[in-house]
Image (cartoon, rainbow, N blue to C red):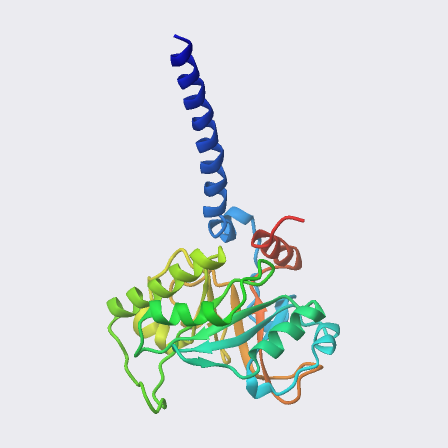
Length: 264
């Protein structure tokens, strides 16, 4: 009887351990879902012009040259997305310099990958992971999908099913590694041609330099970022730079940031 009781006691202890571990895994697994605007209670902004939105950032690559990140932050830039990789074998030559300097200046920053339609999503995900640090304070990674008619090596426009499959493979791999669901960047043409109705669980970053996203992106009323110009200027960056608006209020921005950063 005592032996049986000892076995039962061990089984109960083991069950409690499994419950605790399971709960921890459940919390970790819900991390991406917590970025859902409804779950977070984001209020959003109803404006149709860039100046209606109080939180603005930039996206940069090697073409911006050397950036004075302390000046960028002092100039009111709230966030920056930095080009990291392209395809399965290219790294932006300024990525690590920008990544480290933006972080040191206290600018919230994330990395974006330019997708190449002649390599698998899994292969490109491995390349991104190889080159982008796993920083829990970083913004969610971004998958930049565009048509590439001027590419010297790949001008493919895959069918919708293939695109969704390869994008999913890329983003699922990144989500597992970084613990946060990637954001999708899409200009008007590729969204119109292939992406309407896809990826309802992902946040979108939309390009619209002439019109508000509501004009050209069917079904994407709940976008997260709006790239509203490619010819912007900010202190600390020489020449023109892409400027982007966050979809909500300043309070929404702080809530959104906290949702994917570790507790203090």
